[in-house]
Image 1 (spheres, rainbow, N blue to C red):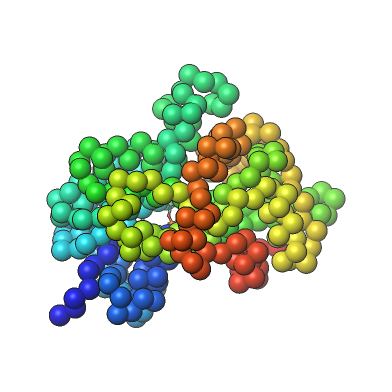
Image 2: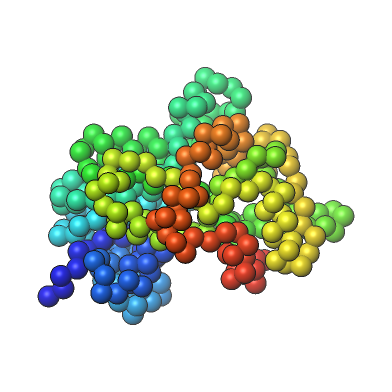
Length: 316
Ligand SMILES: NC(=O)c1ccc[n+]([C@@H]2O[C@H](COP(=O)([O-])OP(=O)(O)OC[C@H]3O[C@@H](n4cnc5c(N)ncnc54)[C@H](OP(=O)(O)O)[C@@H]3O)[C@@H](O)[C@H]2O)c1
């Protein structure tokens, strides 16, 4: 029988959790073993993780009993929710509460909750510098995660609160890569002015989470913010241009213009980028590159990430 302690990884087939499963498996013979959670053990991603050596277990964030069963006997649990699958902050709140309850039921000794700021602590709902969305939020996908921190605290779950950063994979999958402008020059567009945005390779989120589990008790009850680099729009454009061998410019647009773009979630992201811009000192200070590298010595810069991923960036 294995002497290893089990880390249950929610979202194992996704970006954040996948990075953690791979980090645990790469440390074969180490302290931890990986139990990945999926709704569909037959998916290609789940089967790949099984082949790599993870135990894959079926559970659903909407079903607290399935989560409690999945967490039984584990040492730690990495908890993440996927707002972009349903666009409902109330559903995200309920799923986070289910995770916290299941962790309490199962007596998990160390939970990492992948969270973000509740921006309403900086921009109250009656502050009209940005519109209130969905009745009760400024940045729905961020506020719901930040507000859920308290649920883990209230239930007495030993939790590390992991503040994540903008994935550089958004240049591949989220439609944020360089787009050709009317003059034929490519550009990336953010309402960030000349402020810096903390960014990270999504794989490094899981690797940092692995570092947190290894540090253990010292980080329970603490908030840990992670980033690979803090870069301005102009610096990101320059790195993309260098990697792609193209001129890429940074288009700074006002947040209200960004909110009006024609894609699902544009208002949410417009408010998010405005929050990053207007509270930039707080937002960046909460995400230490130095601590991220201590947790994960393989932490990538944007240029380092681009060296491996430039070919995946869609250029039309
Ligand atoms: N994009 C960014 O820049 C960024 C930055 C910071 C934070 N985030 C946050 O990251 C979160 C998404 O994480 P990700 O990018 O790692 O996800 P992802 O790659 O889109 O994958 C989603 C994962 O969630 C699992 N999942 C979704 N609904 C589930 C349910 N009901 N029950 C069980 N598992 C469920 C999926 O598992 P199965 O499909 O296998 O069941 C899958 O593993 C979002 O909430 C987003 O706000 C994103």
